[in-house]
Structure formats: C-alpha cells, structure tokens
Length: 225
Figure 1 (spheres, rainbow, N blue to C red):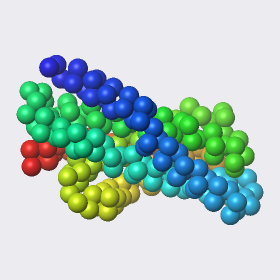
Figure 2: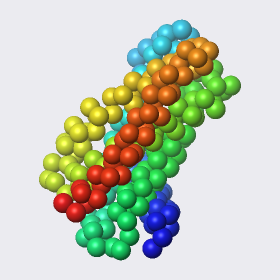
Figure 3: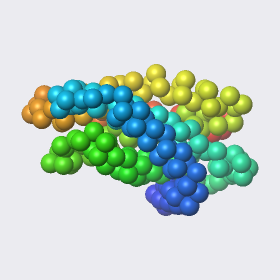
Figure 4: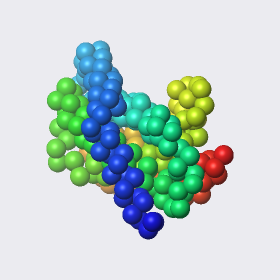
C-alpha cells in the first residue's frame, strides 16, 4: 500500500473511531472543565495577573487531557488483537506511526478548540484579535506532544502498568514543549511584540522536528519488539 495512503487511512480510522466512541473526548472534556472551574473559583484575577497565570493553567489542562487521550492511542488495537497485524502488514512501519500521530494531532486540536472558548468565557480573556497566533502555538505544541505521546503509547500499551508508566515517560521528555508553549502563550496574552517571544515558537518547532524524526525511526524497533 502506498506510504501516504497508509497515513491517511490510519489517521482517518482513529479520528472516526474517537469521535464515534466519545469515551475519550468526554473524559478529556470533563477533566479540563474541572480544571477550569477549580481555577476560576480559586482566584480573583486582575487583567495583569490573568495574563501571567492563564498560560500555565491552559497548558496544565491541555497537557493532562492530552495524556488521557494519547495514552489510549494503541489500546483499541490491543483489545482487538490487531497489534500483530501492524507487525506483518506489508506497509512501512514509519507510515503506521505517522498515521497514528496524525490522528492524535487532529483529535487533540479538536479538543483544544472546543475547550479554549471556555477559558475565554470563565476568565474573561480579551484575546480574540490574537487567535491566529494562539492557534499557531497550539498547533506547534500539539505536534510535539503527539509525536512523543504516540511513541510512548506504543511502547507502554502492552505492559501491565501502562497507566503509570506512560505519564512517567512522557512528562519529563515533554518539559521543553510545555515551557515553550507557556512562554509563547504568555507573550501573546501580554501583547508583547512578536520579537520578544518568537524564540519560544522556534524552540517548539525545533523540538517538534527532533521528536518526530527520532520517533519515526524508533517506532519500527518498538513495534517489532
């Protein structure tokens, strides 16, 4: 099967399965909603404090909702005894990884786009004019998280303590992504010139490239192992 067809069909299958199942999206949504409610009722923020604290709160919510979704990337294949088919199917293993990765990126972005208006509503954020730059940061950070999350999900899906091992492996590696995302988002919220936070966006892009290339090449070994 053609390399790009494999990517397209796996991504489409995963996205359709998640949207039909709704188990993941509902658990991710309610977790993020709880985070928003707790922080919104815990702090009485003035506009300056909101711009300082909100990026951290947003990426706590996005990061942990991402862990819920990414950790289950390969669970359907395990439950349906399909992991062996991934190993023997006459298709490049890298294409399988990119298909799962693409499905995860699209699914996480859908969840983030649904959740972000709730942050605007509950914290009275005045960021409508900054939406394009915020979306750019969301996409850059989500690519990095999904690249790592897809790889570690494949690595841990068949071990007994996968719910514990997945975040233990993912979170330390994802620290540069979270730092870059929080600092870039803070720059946008504060109305700083692009030159003051563009280096954080470049950091996200660099780590996205590193994580994607390494994960692409390591995935075949993990799948065969």
